[in-house]
Amino acid sequence: MRLLISDLTHRYDDLTVLDRIDLVLNEGEVLAVIGPSGCGKSTLLGIAGGIVAPSAGRVAVDGPVPDGCLNPITYVFQDFALLPWRSVEENVALVLAHHPLPAADRRARVEEGLRRMGLWEFRQALPKQLSGGMRQRVGIARALAVRPAILLLDEPLSALDAQTRELLMDDFLDLWRREKTTALYVTHNLDEALRLADRVVVLSRRPGRIREIVTIEEPRDRRLAPAAQAHLAEVRARLWHLMKAEAQMADREIARA
Ligand SMILES: Nc1ncnc2c1ncn2[C@@H]1O[C@H](COP(=O)(O)OP(=O)(O)OP(=O)(O)O)[C@@H](O)[C@H]1O
Image (tube, rainbow, N blue to C red):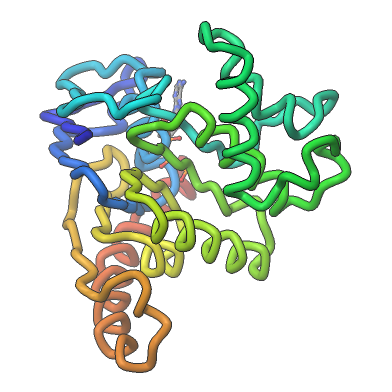
């Protein structure tokens, strides 16, 4: 399934946050969105997920809904958004609560999501008994339980320390190696974008406009290999050059406000 965003503009009252965004997320593609603080990245994700109605323009999906998919476009949140009084498996099951499913199918989906994220042994734990990384794995398992066609990830690793971020990135890579994933991935972090994305969309400072879309040619699996480093360093320099000027200007605007 593809996600098509055309001529999208969004305003909160007088504040224009996104300006004429045209973007296609292709099936099987991971598209990272980076840009300075406040440039409208989360708003873009909210509009893509149907939570925020755009002021102008359109978001459409194209292609058949895959078998077993209960919610074609599904979120993974930055702050995990788990219910603290529910166990891991109950948190995952929650997204299935409003779907009329046979009990066996419900159980199978929960188990599948938990196993895919290495959480099966922890199914009866409460969120507070888990590390931050494990909590985010629960958030991902919950998203997977609906078998989404498109994942929307809003800075999913930003609440985690650097080591845990590395581990979670490995989890994403494992998951995406095993099965085709289509994802829009908002991040502040250039290194995450360079490890995980097929293409990187650089937004300008607010109002967010597309400054450039940079393709990372190196296959994801080979990005840690020495032979990939020259290409990745070149892409990183290009992305940083684009981001730096925007971030500096955004910083000055925030300082003046
Ligand atoms: N519901 C809202 N009502 C009014 N203004 C909002 C609302 N949501 C966001 N904004 C403002 O819109 C702008 C864009 O916000 P958004 O969260 O989309 O940016 P962002 O790029 O994701 O920011 P960050 O990188 O800091 O997370 C910000 O100035 C924010 O304060």
